[in-house]
Amino acid sequence: MNQITGSAKCSSYDREEVCRAVENAIEAAGGLPPLAGKKVLLKPNLLSDAGYEKAVSTQPEVLYAVGKLVLEAGGVPLIADSSGAGILYTPRVMKRVYQKCGITRIAGDLGITLSNETGSQDRAFPEGKVMKHFTVIDQACEADVIISVCKLKTHMFTQYSGAVKNTFGVVPGLDKPVFHSRFPDPADFSEMLVDLNELIRPDFVVMDAVVGMEGSGPMSGDPRHVGYILASKSVYTLDVTAQRLISMDPLRIPTTAAAAARGLVDPESVVTAGDAIIPLTDFVLPSTYSSPSRNTWFRRNVLRRFQTMGKYYAPAPVVKKEICVGCGQCVRICPVGAAAMKGQKASFDHRKCIRCYCCHEMCQYHAIEMKRSMAGRFLHMFLR
Ligand code: SF4
Ligand code: SF4
Image 1: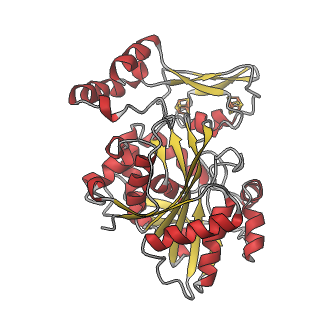
Image 2: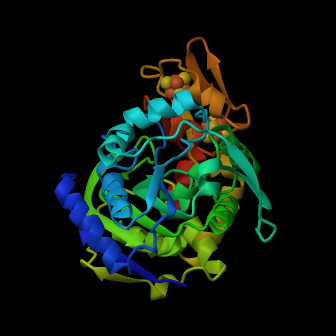
């Protein structure tokens, strides 16, 4: 079990500074695996075509810096991802995403040809805890080495999005909502994510934590300067460090809790090498997160009980009618048919809604807010 995260301060996305920080963080983490002659998949977080300026996707300069090191080590880099739930995984759609997220530009700078392939394969995983097989994009199946190049963000459903969550991008577009429907509880969904990471086993991970997303991530939060590049041989180890960096308790994050329960990480033993990590105590966490100082046994168990009765406690989507443009993306993505168009505006049936937050995640117009019922607000005041 690798428990080291390399860290390097990085104040901006200036190319030279990012290249230096990425190199330092990787070195502090123990270095990249041997890459000579190997096909190396660089897997960024390209949640949507909303672009990187709003901290939705991995900043392309970080991807450039990793790609440059792969080339220098004799590897053959390729870049691929499938965007968030409900975004089609087709050559035309991915071309637009790559363009808007700055990937086409940096691929040109690196001299890499972006593949138009959008095929996928079934991969059996009999040892999975909750999933015995996954459909995975071809590039992830065919690469010799996978380097995840993830983004530090909050997440309304899983509370945090970093290395473990980034691997979900190897599942092709429209397969993703099915998982939300099958695993409506964040704890179960996180077990699925850990299964997927154990199948894919990214060989190395680099995190863009120069500017992260705080608040209502992963799409509608606010960019926040954090100032680090992180690197590790373990997705679980890196996530623990990043969670501490934004003052989250790692064991309150369901992906890390699931990995820790399987012995894949021990948060107490994770160490940082390189520049010291100074936690941001005022990083705005998602409203679904409850702070460790209030995480008593009583609160945890009462909270779990009410989360099971999520309709009373968990925030539910409400459309901001003045902003909704009627694009219908939320209706297409909803795994249980709880979203519908009424006139030209979205509307949500809270009785059907399983609180997966896919609609909130994918609304590019930030026209969906998550609100608690009155009973939920009362419980939240008591439990948070
Ligand atoms: S709420 Fe957002 S995703 Fe849904 S129709 Fe309106 S603008 Fe589109
Ligand atoms: S309406 Fe509810 S179930 Fe449907 S996508 Fe939104 S949060 Fe998920």
